[in-house]
Structure formats: structure tokens, C-alpha cells
Length: 621
Image 1: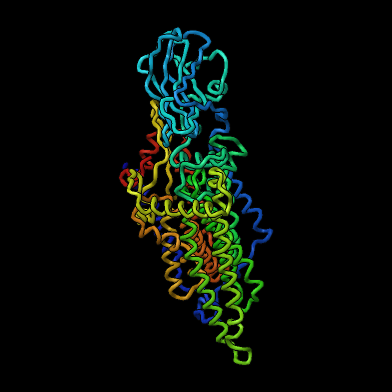
Image 2: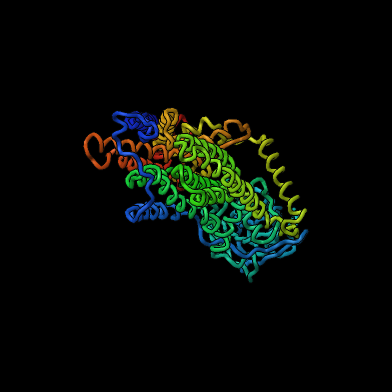
């Protein structure tokens, strides 16, 4: 850790602490009619839970366009081998080069199956020199691989590929041979292994291959498309089905399998904006809060990898948005007006749970908010005069609300969850909702629970929940060094200015909640419901499990922005406080500084080692 990176860390930490202290207002927001604090706080303009208006469309649109441009640029190659040669057990395929050549290295693109091949080289087609085995195990699928020969083989005219290990199917997408000078050798004739030579890259990289858990989820998406029972069944199916939509649109390419994640990263921004606007009724606050979230490192990196976490976070955000609409309705709202937001909250809960179980954790927070809402409505009813039927209206309201809530949050989500298993049943020839179908679902639930509860694997970049709070240990997704003093690397972690200040904002939410602030309580419940389950989980965990919490940190930080603007209007008559946009601008500047290690951009090692290697090397890029 250089002195420059040390000073940079201290400066950002000081800025976070300073901003938290500067914006920390403990007074709750409660209208005086509901027992709110008097004096100074009673004079502050309270949020009006405003819906979005036309004035919000332009700033939100600009933020979405700016984020979309950053997210889709360099997402991955839009062209990869699409034709695959499927080997039979013991089959040997012989390919002929257009002329005798020296062979120095071999590139090959693996399919979605597992197995291994042996490669033989020959000058005359009768005497073969067998090279080392080409491996295609579960961690090596849908990737370009490179085999460098210790000594270039001279005068080679024939190449033999033999299927040595095969478990059901075994497919290979493309094979490319290079001479000792790096020139691509031409084949005589074409088949599925040599028909897309124009797509052969100079070398394997994240731009043309799967990385990290893409090896599981992209493979499963491709298997679902091809009616094959999937290899990875440790998470519910829906997230991988969403990934498969991008593959259907753009082919089995890195851009195709990452497209839906990046698109959902953009789609997260409007509902977050709408939630913040509902909370605080302020366009500037909404813009600043969404901008901070949009260019958070975790949001940016995690939505650009073809894994399922993005979809869980999106649906958690959606289900909490509609629960907030229900939570803040007038206490005397008729039943028919309370049901639509309740239904939509339950609907998105079900969709999220079918993507990843993290949405189920968030569902515990929804249940608590539902109970609080009923308690508040009962309290309101008991305060009404006897002549207006004290408490009777609540007794008429509660039974149908409970019945509808059971339908919305249990029956419908269970149906959505069960329907998501249709590809599993289709691959096995099982009829939907038959006894065998239900048994398949049940057996998978037991497998998932056993897998996650008994997992003993370790990882060099694993981290416990308390490290997430302080952004201590990123997970390195990709790292490649080059001879010219540059490297390509990227990792999932948080923008420290946002995460550290957001943690302070969440402490502020705790104080306000204890003093009776309902909006702060809503934010705090959402945050804790997505964090606390991980406190008790002992298996290997990673910092990306904190991703759902960042939605509520953005809302908490927006609360601080709102307080600043409210106090500015009270004390000086200004429409807004400059600190909110200044903080959002500082977070954007952090994004630019760290951009190389968020995208894999080939960059100077001196820059990253000097400026970005924080915490004594805990930040490894």
C-alpha cells in the first residue's frame, strides 16, 4: 500500500465521516397531528409522498442514458462461435491444414458440456504426436482456451481431435491453430470446428469467454434453451431463464448472456427514483440519490456479469416500492384502494423468490411492515369517536385484508415459483403440476437447502458480513498481467464514499426510527431484512451478497439529502442545499478514478498499485 493510496483512503474516509456528521439530523418527521415534535421540526416542510411528474422525466432519462452508455460499452463480444461439433464416445475427428505448417499454439472454444479431448498432430496422417489433454470440465465451459506447445511442431498437415472423456454430450465450438509467429493457419475444407475462423480472438479474455459464476448460470441458460436438464440447480430457475432471453436475442455470445443483467441494471433506476420521490417529494433529492446508486461500483460491476443477483435485487426494489405505496395510504383508505399495491408487492416478491432466495429474506421485512400497518390502522380506528364506530371499521377491514394477503404473498408467489420449474420438467418429460412435477420441485428445495447450509468450500476472496459494511474485501473477478507493465482487472465492491456515508446514514435511520419516524423505519427494515440473515450464515459468503442492501443505503442517504434541503429552506430560504449534488458529483468522480478496475480496461499497473490498492492489499487489483 503506497503512501498515495493511504492518503487517498484517509481523505475519502474523512469526507464520509464529515458528510455524515454534517447531514445527521436526528429529529423525526411526524406531523403534529400524529404526535410529532414541536418547535423547530414542526416548522419544517414535510414530504408529501409525491408521485413522479413530467419534471422528473428529463433528469431521470439523462441518468439512465448515461448509465446505459457506461454499462453496455465493453460489455462483451457480440460474436462468438455458434456452431458446435458434438462428439460421440471414442470418436476421433481428423482435420487437414491447407499446407504443411509449424504449429506453435492452439485455441479452442468449449461448449456447454463437460469432458476432455486429446490432440494429435501429424505430417502424413499416419504417425501421430499426441499433445496434452484439452480439458473441458465444469469450470471451463463456454470459454476460449489456449494450449501453447513447449516446442513448435514442424511440418504439420493433419490434426486429430479425440473425445477422451464424455458424460452424455460433449461439444466443441471452434478450433484454431497458430504458427510459431502467431499467424492463424488455414484449414482445407470446413466443418463445425473450422467454419468460424474469423471469430478467433488473439487470446482468451473476459470479453470473449465466461468468467466467475457465469460458468454455471450461462451454461444453465443454454441448457434450458436446448431442453437439457441443467447442471447447476443450486438456485431457483427464473434468473437463468431471464439470462436465456438475452441469448435468444443476441446468440450465445458474451454480449448476449450479459445483456439482460445490464438491461436490468438500467431498469433498476426508475423504480428507485420513484421510491425516493415518494419518500421525500423532491426532484433534486431523487436525482442525487439515484445518481449515487447508478454509479456505485457494486451496481455497475454486478449487473454486467451474467449471474442471477441482479434480478433478485431488482424485484426486491419493486416489491418494497409497492409495499411503501400500501404502507403510506391514509388509515381510512377503503379496502379496494389498498389491494392493488399489496397485490403488486406480492407479485414481485414471488418473481424475486423464483430468481434467488435473497428475495425471501427481503420478504420478512415486507411481513413486518404489513403488521405495522395493521397496528397503525387499528390505533387510528381506536382514536375515532364512539359515534363513528370506534374500531368497527378495522374489524370489517382486517379479515378480507388477511385473506387477500395470503393470496398475494403465499398462494400467487408459490404458483410463480412452481411454474419456474417448467424447463426442468420439460427436460425430463414430466407433465406440469403432476405428482412427479411437485416431487421434482420438492427434491430441488431439499438439495438447495442442503447445498447452501452444508457448503464447506473456501475462496481467497470470501468475506464475512461485517467486512461488507466497511467495504473491506472485494471479490476479484478477473486479473491478467501483460508484459508492457499494464494489466486488466475488475472486482465487485462498493464505492467507498457511498458505502461509508451510507452506513452513517443508516445509523441516522436507526435513531430516527427509535424516535418514531415511519419513513426511516421503512428504510431500516428493508436494510436489516436483507442483511441480518447473512449474520447467521456460516458458509462461504462474498461481498456481492450485500448488493440488495445498497438500495436501502441509497434511500437512507437520500433522506440525509432531503434533511439538508429542508433545513436550507428553513434557515436561508434556498430551494436546495449544494451539498447533495456535490456529494453525488464526488461519487461520480470516484467512479471515474476506479473505472479501470470496474471494467477490465487495460491500464498501467503503476496507476492501480499506487492509487487504488487500499487496506494493505485487501483491495487486490
